[in-house]
Amino acid sequence: MMANFRDIMSLIGLALDAMGVVIVAAGAVVALLHAALHSARTIGDRYRTLRENLGRAILLGLEFLIAGDIIRSVVVDPTLMNVAVLGLIVLVRTFLSMTLQLEVEGRWPWQRAAADTKHLGNPPL
Image (tube, rainbow, N blue to C red; front, side, top):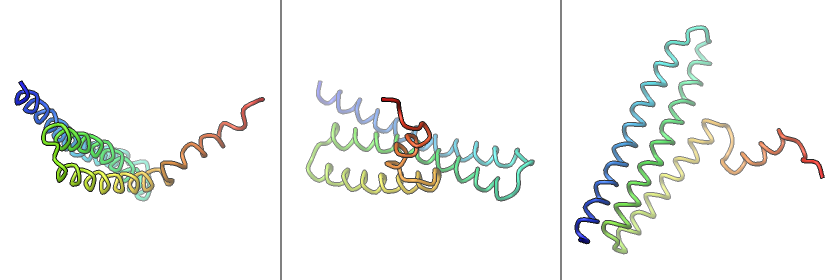
């Protein structure tokens, strides 16, 4: 019974990895098509839009890849070495996600709440 559970979790982890790769690849194609088909913009605007859309696809794909790593490392084979490797992988991918978000949105993830509050104004007392 335990072997079946681990096999299923391993397949789920691989499926999440595959989804992450498909999301990045499809996102790249969609971003390229979007940039190419919107000819009314300047080259600078097209490039900026391409980078933003590609960055969003990479961010979403990274989330799926991290989920697959977590499932395989913790559920399938929970050794101390695998958990340490998982921690390093998550650290690197989190750094990549944060820097991509800075590139796409122009601010750090924790600055979003402050910026959103500024746009809404002060709530009434």
